[in-house]
Length: 308
Image (cartoon, rainbow, N blue to C red; front, side, top):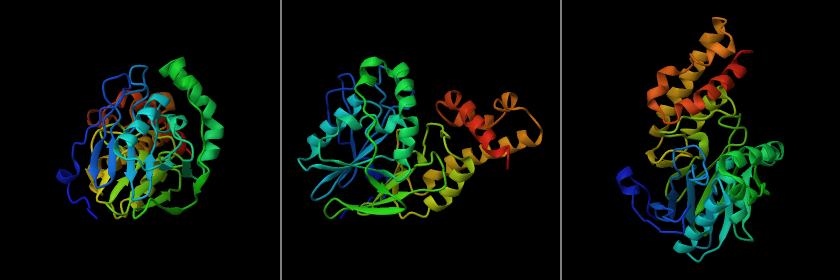
């Protein structure tokens, strides 16, 4: 058993040259014994990147493999499977989805037969409600050929609160978080052998946090999330690892500023259309893609907090 003891120890370069998102390379890094991560681009999905914007995980046990998220297109999912096959002949037993956004699960159709799809107990409802919208939205962003290959595959192995999956000498602790935070179906995966936490979009680094659930709920979840006995975290977005729980500090600050500024604008009677331009501007230079998501976050926070 080899645990991760520092960031210097976990950033090991195991680079696998796969097919491509186009054809150059699809890179995975070994971050601990049996744990690997692919860092997606900190970018909006485009035909050029094939929706390769989310971080993906591979966890290898004595008997089997789990993958954590499958990416924003079938092409990305195919590269993920090729990466697994480059590392081991063990079967992919579990496909774990951290939440319902397409950049994390549109690669599901590329997964091999026999793999069990795992997710938060609310994820099937979320996909039934928004799946067609996501397909339409991504068709505009990625183009017809990539989107036509996508199949919305809901999990059948559901996590109500907590569940442990065993890959053979490697237990994975899955937690379904509530209340709504980043979304209303957030799931994390802790490799208890190595202390690596695959946090999905409950943790953002570099990339501005994106609010699709509840700002107050997210701040509440962070207080409990930081108690997990992890050593290092793989965020849902951002091209780096970070020590735990220090990794939460920037995100917590941003969400606190978002809530505080929103409450101030509401108290001053500022209408929504003017308020969104005033909220969390002090955070602009701290995050990538700020201008792409700030107004959306402010609108979501305003709609949540104006009745509190």
